[in-house]
Picture 1 (cartoon, rainbow, N blue to C red):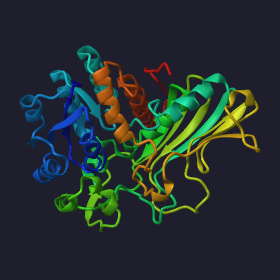
Picture 2 (cartoon, rainbow, N blue to C red):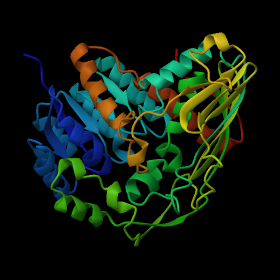
Picture 3 (tube, rainbow, N blue to C red):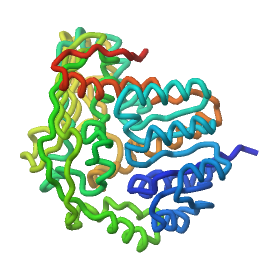
Picture 4 (cartoon, helix red, strand yellow):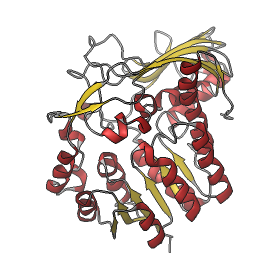
Length: 405
């Protein structure tokens, strides 16, 4: 009989109820053994909607009192380090939502603990990582020389730009996005450095400028999420994003962490590029681009977007699987875009919440190391931490971590 992995979930927030828990409840080789959140209304909803077998309001009690194989840590960034260290202490495999940490001392504590304990740790986000076969394919083409020598690249991680008024600041989550220990927008968007590394390999050095540019914000009160869950009756329709973007933002909050970061990354394999992380508070004209990664080399260019997942044009056509009449090789977008509603995952496309959950369970059962593992997490974390250090000192920061990818 196949082994069933007993999973605990700490943090019954938006991503838990929208993505992780609905997927977990249907896995044949996993069960939701326990859920934990400070808010009783949220744990009660998770028991009712997703069949969690027990509920706790203290993470450490859950870890000590319940027999678990793994834990999904889906809480605000300020709790990630102590919660991960407790999982390590208990010898429990874990998935850690972004960011891994907001400084390298803490990130290294997690990585060293995972190595010493011999446990599996998936470090989010797994999107824009080698776990996505499209990114693994692009990396293989770049390594084969399809772009020649990489000269420069650019990327802007700014959120939506053509969806009405745009997202601007996050509509909820003071602790997750605005508090000082959250890391702010910089650490909320590790997708940007992950995107660069997944295609171009490890980073060598960082120079940067950061600031807190917009200090006053308004968000939707947390009580609205609790009320939403209390009304939910279908585990497949417990996605708060369906309603929160249209709710009034009546709770004032202050931005305490970086919300505007401009980094210059020098890559080990060549090429220097600019990466901006922040928010756009008003829309741009449709069709003018949204800051997706663009890479320019001596033998070719790689462009994300334009109606495709990514496209390459190259003088080394023999390296491309196919080309169209204009000389481009296109990787098509996956999934049903007609039903897509940002920021929800596109139906049928790579859903990192689902893929990461499946990947963790598979790695436990098959005793193999995860792909977005602690080494990956260390490198991506250092790129963001180095941005803060360079901005503070005005100096170039040499990376101390690397990846064989």
